[in-house]
Image (cartoon, rainbow, N blue to C red; front, side, top):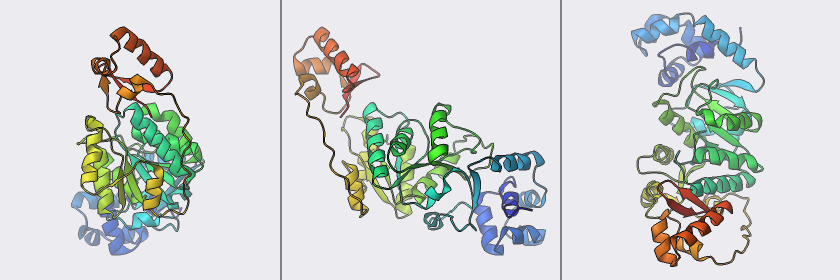
Amino acid sequence: MSALDPWLRLALAPGVGNGSLIRLLTAFGSPEAVLSCGRAALAAHLSSAQCDALLAEPDAAQWDAVQAWLAQPGNSLMTLADTDYPRTLLEIADPPAILYCKGRRDLLSQPALGIVGSRNATPQGVRDAEAFARALSDAGLTVVSGLALGIDAAAHRGALAGTGSSVAVIGTGLDRIYPAKNKALAHALAETGLIVSEFSLGTPPLPGHFPRRNRLISGLSRGVLVVEAAPDSGSLITAKVAAEQGREVFAIPGSIHSPLARGCHALIKQGAKLVESAADILDELAWQQRLAPPILPETPADPVLDALDGAPTTLDTLAQRTGLTLDALSAKLLTLELDGRIASLPGGRYQKIH
């Protein structure tokens, strides 16, 4: 019998969530003690259905699937009893009793910063997330995010491109990649970073799982940076939980005309730190390593670029600002887009990429 078997018995009991597991472990001290106590003792902490689930034998197919998964290189199960269980998670109100890990679990004990934001990020937001993540990675911080499309994926890519690494906290079982578009990124994280989940193998991407995942993103981090977020964005939930956990909250400001800047502006009004560079974050964290200011190549003035103030702008507005004909302006915009200096957005709008 493996030392992990009692933990797995608890984890695979249907209907017995993490909160119930924490109550049982607090009351009885260990998984072995929980499993050896009688129904009457369990009933003081669980419902009748939960008692039935915990006292029953685990589902054989599910048990075998977990054992086969654990036999694969790089896969492991981390429990509250492990010496390398991250101390930062012990500080939060609802630490996961069990974590499924794929990759370098040592990253969970490294100083980290969370980066989150919109799934429907603008090209500028993606560039900002990658640049901040790479700079923080080069400074020695692990970047934690949620493997979602948009800002999350950009943060992981930037961190993996730096000298540090990245941790993805997901809201499904580790045998599922969600969203499927991030399959290649997930494989890269498993190779040189870490993917982690508190959910059992086979768990689908249910909506209620992602707020629970968010508390771990902030819980593993010294602070959380929000890059772009609409007013109703799930990223604001992560920021709220981070503040409740005593973590720093950072936000990148944007145009007052951009819907994806409003969430960040709301956070700044509520006390989040406005940041314009990774150095701002490192200074606030009193991080020992400092970044040299980037040396940006000088580019000649361009009237069309000057007319783009950072907010998505329509063709008609640009024509008014520059005095160019629509044909001449369209040709110039195409050249700038091919050069990677602007991005075309839905609705016939354009945005400068810094």
